[in-house]
Length: 468
Image (tube, rainbow, N blue to C red; front, side, top):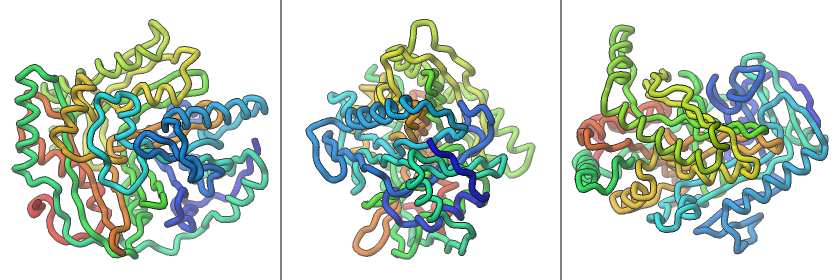
């Protein structure tokens, strides 16, 4: 492994030359995201990857590698590539300071859950993107944001030099992402009916909770660039798992607050489910009152604890006996626009469990399905009547040394080209329990969308004028 220190520059400026390039990705996070958990130095990191050595995709349960379709499932193909590259790195015996030095970067969409549990297969994704897409990268630009130091990490000098040569230095400026009127895929009344449907199923004993979603949709001119959304997000404070992931069929802008799982090379695993959300207050007193109300809300606490129980059960199938611990339960964590109720569960993977096996065992994440998981997935498919695509899947990286970190793909925007225009979708949802108030659940989805909506110039007031 070759490490070269380069001049410091803002990661978004460095990424600017890659805007619009398929499989060029930027991950940037605050103290709790993208490598912070197992980084001995501490602080936030950012990573840029581009020009992958291989492209791994999955469509309808079949993997496609560099454009060639294989009769192999997507997760299995991902696992084979990861383990092969990890064996190569272990043979070289390198020790590096960056959390991500080379490896696989990409996403698994919600529909990949059908590989894990075929009986819960739901509707197909409404997006043109693959069900799974990962690039295999031999070089990474790494940015230690707290120390204001930047590095190129590469398996071979040539790959590192090629990436370093392309990095930007100064920002030329990004025009705001502009759209037409935003509409909702479901009206407030229609969404409330979906919530009530779940409540009736709970009363009938079918399940305990289910996470139900809808989409905010708008058209945008082709000159509207996804990188402008990420730049606007950064202006008000970056989310734990922010990023821009570009593919041939579209792009994903992430402002996710939720860790799916972080895994280190020794097999330690941490999961941090979020259940419970409140907006920030207009002043310190109002803000504190909203945080206190979230901490004491019986519905949100019960919902969070149910998902902790579900994740503990999922982890028990892949972790060593006696290693699972509840680090904290129902802790209020404050982000720039919302308060969240967060729990943390940790464990130690069994020796035969690798990072991809752990990812698939937890997939899809309990916080975005419900409990029991399989019945919740069936319920989601029946009620939502369309797939979710990248939304509610997982986004992240598999480092060649064995480290891995993924976020839950919530608070994302999915941007595609449609009839020479861009179409932007912002999916939002929430957990429904017997205590849920249908109108309040709809308003909570708008609170969750607010931060991404502020990154775009759009017509209409989404809090008042969303219509089906």
